[in-house]
Image (tube, rainbow, N blue to C red; front, side):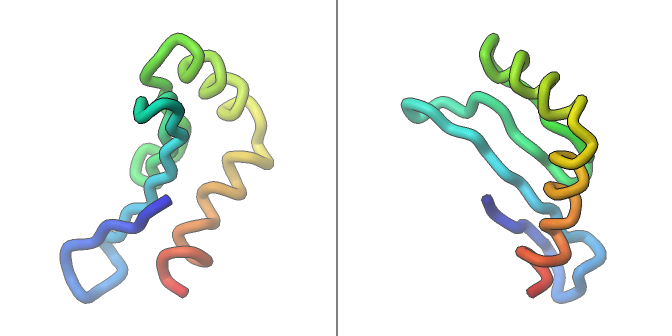
Length: 70
């Protein structure tokens, strides 16, 4: 997981959580998109499962406050 920002303020901060296997990104959560995006066949399947779980999405969306702005 990482936080990206281009200024001193927190208004443009982006939280990105990559799920990687064998140096390939399977799926990624991006706080600007607000949901998971799959990049492989397995990643697309898991992204659909994670996106259908409101608790999982809420937890990831809250990470920008607890992980990035801490």
